[in-house]
Image 1 (tube, rainbow, N blue to C red):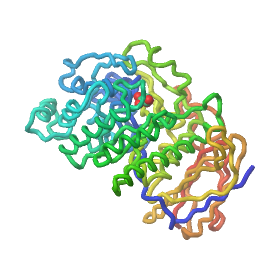
Image 2: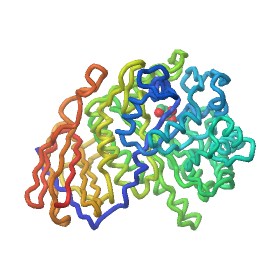
Image 3: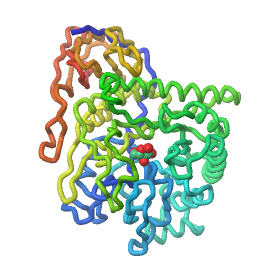
Image 4: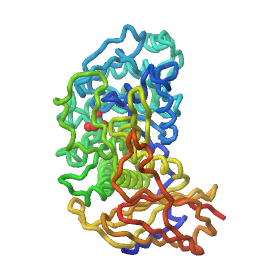
Length: 498
Ligand code: AHR
């Protein structure tokens, strides 16, 4: 058992909670779309074929934005094949996931679904097998006012009003050799500058995301961001970052602490962006779009070439443990701690494919363990993110060196008087007692303390609520809050001005 002191003061803040940190991602991959969000014939399907049981869970999850339609898929996507009369849409072979794409769900169906479930769509364009002309046409089809060919085509497809999609991702993981149309930093920089320039001629208010690195271990990491931003600084607002975590070679100690990696990753991308801005004598603060992040047991994935060609195969349907939920909670804490420079973040993905929500075709939908820290953080992180300081034990991790045992964040809503504290104890063995002096907040009452800990169970169709947040042990003694945090645990505490 160790002790930890967390210093907290409403006067020291990082910035307002950016609600777009609670984004998600829907890719035409595996069963995310087909038999995930969309399954005509399912007992809960609406008149458009979308599952209302899944829609209800998406609302409960509290996601705010959604990136679509990929991922690697977008790098060979023909958006035109997914619009217009259903019976005329082709069946294509998607080279990314070696799957049959029926195009039953395309731009208009997806964007209608987003308005229904209250998600802000973020669209990605294909800069792999396609380029500037096709991206411009897609933008016009989606956002153009009636009166010219492509917006009129959209109107003839039943959607007279522009969709007004405000954020566009210019390609996906273009630094990765696996990506169709993979490019060198200089090649991508040239292309992204051209596309961003054209997009802003159409609408200077569009927010554009350039591809950053596919992960921090990429050989071009750092240099890629520098070259891309050097070419496109004036026209892009965000640069992407992607990261998937798992215990590498069984190293669960580092896995439990991988929020540290995300933290350093964000710091390094921000430093690179600011360096480029300095070099350009610009005050611009390019933000990070952490538009793919999650736990993904990649060692269990046999690779694209092992995929049997079919429609909506079961791909990377990871069943998440309590440890995974603690890690996901920790990653959300990191994103919040960087609320000032993370402009968007999307957990990858939303349903079935490494997802918080699972479904069975014709059957139920359920919440995975990782659903809970996401939903509770999205619901209760309000107001300003506070800048906390932690004093306590360190853990020696093989991957990141010594890191603090407790990884916390807090949000304070001055107006409503709500204080929320999220933290993880990332030690595999040691419990800790965490003390916080809350005297700078005036009188508070403890409303709720929820914890996820205790076992490495998973939720399944048979036992959908095997893992749920349970009441935690904490005490508010006057203005001193003390929290009992068992080894490997995630916590959400809510206090209210009394
Ligand atoms: O989310 C799964 C895949 O991971 C995405 O398609 C790709 O962008 C990333 O490598």
